[in-house]
Image (cartoon, rainbow, N blue to C red; front, side, top):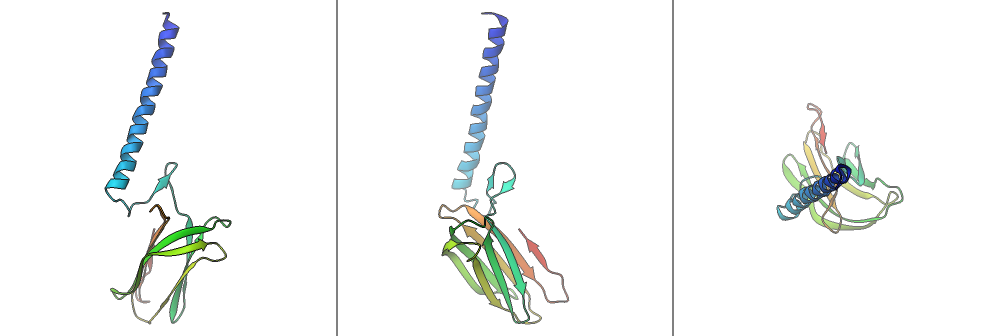
Amino acid sequence: MDNLTKVLISLFLIIIAAGIILAGINFIAVDEFLDDGYAEQEVTVWGNETLDAFVSESESHEDHFVFSYIPRDPNASIDCYLTYEFKQDGNTLESADKKLYERVMASDPIVLEFPRVEGSEYELDVRIEDANGFILHKSGMKVYPQTHGNESEM
């Protein structure tokens, strides 16, 4: 065997070994995700891109809040499960666990409305999943009385 053939065979084996190692790392990550219940972790696709299939919009009125969750793809029709908890001054006013929404579209988004009382602090945590349990959207928001600032987290 000449040196060129040996080099080509060595490169081929290195590429195969690298592929096996990467596949093993990916399998371990998926296995940990499924077995250890990382349901609160963001699901990533193709590197650092998050799988956030919804855009959230909020409206604050004098006596109520309106929160809308709109599919990012204007042509999408999504069946999903909504889990949320809405709190006023630390007390849960309303919540749902995996409430089914069928055929959610940009023209027919998920809309949540809650009452608002001046001087109260509010908190809303939302998670939207598909039928397989993959997180399509996750967000949290706190609304403080006017004497404080407001914050929102993804």
